[in-house]
Image (cartoon, rainbow, N blue to C red; front, side, top):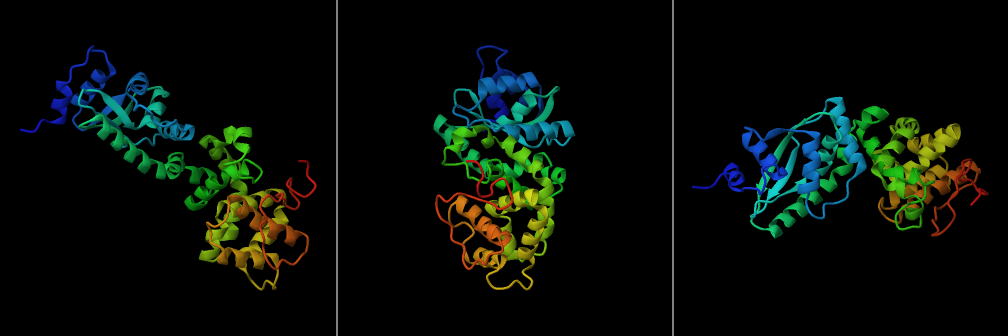
Length: 325
């Protein structure tokens, strides 16, 4: 007869009755549906003693999202904390460290579904963790935003909320990309997810106005207008030159009777002919910046040519020509 999970759990005798393995196994064994009440102190011990070796670094904003859900009463007990059971009886947390961290910082016990998966070897456990971690990472941004109800808080649609969140690193660093540059050392804090969340709220007024403008855009144009580089330039101009920016971006979205070589018509053509993911992040900021500068200076623009290393300028903003280096 096959041995049940609870029988396996009961068969492993820890060295001391107060070990966290014993506490957790007892809680799960007494539960009829896997849902147990995890107190802050127990969550802290699980993290300290049972976390997967080499577990990735905590993401502060994911913890914040779970804490927010607890406070708001939106916590879902069905989101499991998953552990693997090794042949020697050890337990490792392979998924749930952010939820456990949030619980450890709460003021009362929180209901959690605890899932324990038996493994045949340490190697099997490591492979299980790797696959689980990759699947979770893909959805992390959306999970963060959904957890804190970011769209509702900012007054934006879910898609625009995600777009502004993606553009936040540029907005936090004067439209310059962060990765692969000296800025990673100069501004290490902007990499924190919490900073991106703060930027989302900081730029929400401009994002709401931009979203209204975007409603007139075609489906193909809309994809380009929501790209991080384009969006960052749009929000920046709407903040520093609101009247002129409304004219520029509304003209781009509407495409109604624009003459040939109008910078907005040229930018429109560039968006539709250039692959959305081609070029560097900085080039995708330069594209709308060059069109904006030509429009504000009353110049025709026949072609948009991005030059690597060129100083990024934006007419009528703190990034205008002649600004202090």
